[in-house]
Length: 444
View 1 (spheres, rainbow, N blue to C red):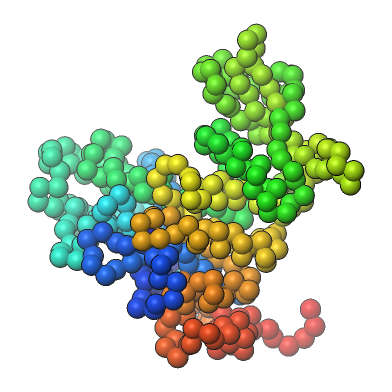
View 2: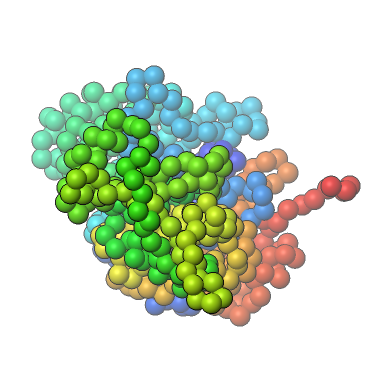
């Protein structure tokens, strides 16, 4: 779970900005909070929403976590440029480093990771474990003085850790380099970035749906049921037989098909038209004489009960957006297999009716408790989600941009006089919290 994210000089956040996901003393919806190991009375929030006008800085929080995930999990190469974007609207910030400070729960351990970097080099990097009794250093790096410091007894082979440090380039994170060189003690925090943290942007989600079909047991059945239950007009998903000629002529694909094991499913995504939603999906299994190929189709029922097959491209934009979110809903559902996930979604409400968006959030929160480790963070324009019957005040943030282009994050829990029955939407639209568009005069 993500517990805290602090930014400085990142895109529109010139000054310090903080997203704190450790629950406050507020008692509302307390049953949904996750107990933190190593702390007697600390709990993590299972959901957080960031509201705000266009260009207020909401997406830049999403981009910060995306940049961290890329840098931790990817070797960008000798000439690679780190994906850090400083504030550009004054004379000092563009030439100053960007800093990220993130605290997260992985397994049963709370970690705090700090990174300070420019596009061409890492200046500082550190990792420590956090508990109520004390914090313990795992490693810290000072690139300016070309030095590393390792916590006492952290690494079983200190000489190997020293070697990994010396072979880490200035434009490379030690966390990434060390795991690539089999420093097993850093596997858990690395895996949080690589496997637990999932980011869902506003672009096409066809690939995420196709990947889930091939990698998650039971996903297609879940997707079929969910699309029917959520009033998309789809009765179920089916496979329509297609010949081998339907597959693209690709040598690597052919090799993958030949190597399929019995019962293994391979999904192939075909871009039908340009844009977010022009796609068709094929499923391939090993057959007796060759590959068994099927096209994924949606089933709709007519007024007389007759069934009709639709292509994916014939579905509405909202249905296709929902299909892109189904892997997340599957992972965060009560019966989802595997480890808990942290999903960060930019514009959760995009193309979705407000009642549907609220239902998705409700369904996820309903499965959260002191023992669960699932988490959903999202940005949104949907003010009907600013509802205290749905979420706590400390789960709601406002992104606001001032007249100088500087963004800040404001937690609604910072407003001490907000009652639990307060109409937050009216207060927000009245400008009390900021984060609303300020239009100048003149017609559009």
